[in-house]
Structure formats: C-alpha cells, structure tokens
Image (cartoon, rainbow, N blue to C red; front, side, top):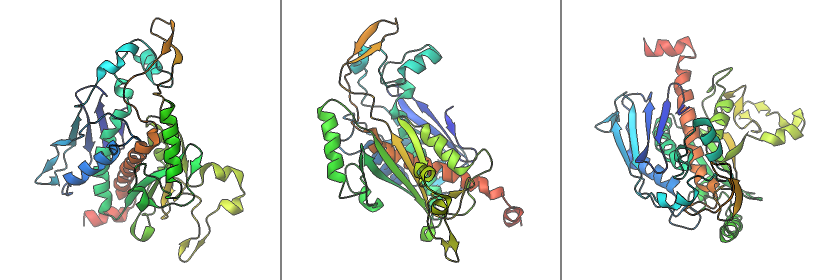
Length: 361
C-alpha cells in the first residue's frame, strides 16, 4: 500500500521519471506552525552534497505546499506537497527497456502488474523517498511540540563499524558517519567500490530522544500496532533495507536474561538493551534502531539476466547511482521514525479517560 500511519497518515505518489513525487499528510492538528525552511532543509539533507558519495542526479528538490497550510499554520485539512522532477534522463535506460536488472524490483513489479516502467524503476525507485522526508519534516515539527527529537547517522559501511557514537558529528560530514575515527576508512571503502564500478552496503543508526533524554512512556498500541513492530514494518518498506534491529537486536539472542534485562532504580533504567521499547511500547528511554541496507543494486559491471522475452542477456547499466544507498537512506529512516512517533503520539491521546476529561472539561 502507499499509506503509513493511522492518525498521522502519510500517502505518497509519483515515479522516478514522472512529473514529480508528492505526498498527502493527513491528521495534522490545526494551529501547528509549519516552518517551510525547515522542510526544505530536511529534503536537501536527503539529496546529499555535491560529492562522490551520492548520486550525480541533481534535482533541486523544491517543496511546494499545495494545501492544508494558511498564514503559516496547519488548518487541520490534509497537507499536500509536491517535489517536481527536473533532472530526469530517461534515455539512460533505453538499453534496458526490456531487461530485468539484477537485484532490482523490475522482475517482481513486472510479474505482478504486467507493466514495465524501465525509467529508473518507476514507482519502485528510491526517488520516492523524498516524499517520506518531506512528510517526516511535518512529523518532526509536531514532535518538537513535546520535546522529541529524531537523529541518525551511519553506523557502518561494509564491515567498518563505529566504535564511538557522535550524532552531532554525523551532521557535519559528507557520509553522515557517527565515528570521526572511522569516517575516512569508511569513505575509502565507498571509493574503492565506486572505482571498481561496484557498490557497498551499510548500516544506519537512528535515535529518538526526548526532554532530558526521556521519551513519553506508553507510545505504541498492543497487540498488532506495537511500536517496534511498526518501526520494523516501515523501515523494511524502504528500498534496499534487508534487516532492522531494535536496541541490541540480534545480540539479545546470544546472551542470558541476566545480561539482557534492563534493571531499574529510582532514577530509571540502568541500561538500554531494549532500545527504549518494552511490550511494544516506549519505556521512557531513548529509542535506538539499526537499519541494514544492501549494496546499491545499480552497478556498472556486466551481469547475467533475462529480458521480457525470457532470453538470456547481459545487463550493462548506464545512469546515475549512489555507490552506497545507506548514506542518504539514513535520513529517510530518521524521517520514518518521526512519522511513526507522531502517529503513536496522537493515537495515545485516547488511552485514558483522564485524557478526555482534560480536552472536554
């Protein structure tokens, strides 16, 4: 489906080489001050700098707000936004008009729908994620009202993992690396992959924190809209994501309960192996999510494949592609976490009868 959320609902539309990418954000409370400059900055973060670590495709990514905002405030109506495509080069894909690119969604989309949009994958292109970032910016503006901040950075490139985490530093370097001591090694690995006409995978780390580090307790809905389950679902719905971990994740399966449990004293939790979520609800600690991206499937090496006539052919790609999708993907994951928390925040308003009493005195 093309919609995420229940109370804070985001629906996206558009294709990689179509007229543009857009979104409709429904459920935004009226009276929220909408900072258009902030939305623009968020979208430009996803675009990446003019450097060798991101795609050479240069879109201006100007966000046009079409509805739902008047005099700088949300009206309570759906907020419609569009980002027009201005730098398409569909001719780059003419040679693969009928060829299935290995590692891409071409194969599955064609067999499901019977239509082949060869122009960069159409709807399955990661270009769609710009709408998630635009809508995520609205979510962040809402979360700011209650002191919640979402942050992200690159934890690892290939097997080169961070030993220290500095979310402020991640905002200041080309690949959003969390560890200043690993950044150059990670960049070298990306360069090596790019020069070999190849690509490399990576892991993004996303954090949500609140006032004094605390997230409101109880965000998440049992049993089938648990916070961690919703996070995993949304992140796995992003192109190129192959795994998601909450807190210690896989490591939790390798240790004893006495090591994994987060003990509590009068000051709160003494550790955060759970990643801030217990029983599918936020427990007040910071939320930590690791998102694992596969290597960019668009590589410039000859690869065996089939065409739509089922002939064996060699796929030779042209075009403009990221050598590591995890870098820009980290910004999208941060936006997705913001959307989920905004939705859970609004869903939580009806959790207690006291909440209704406060609204309808």
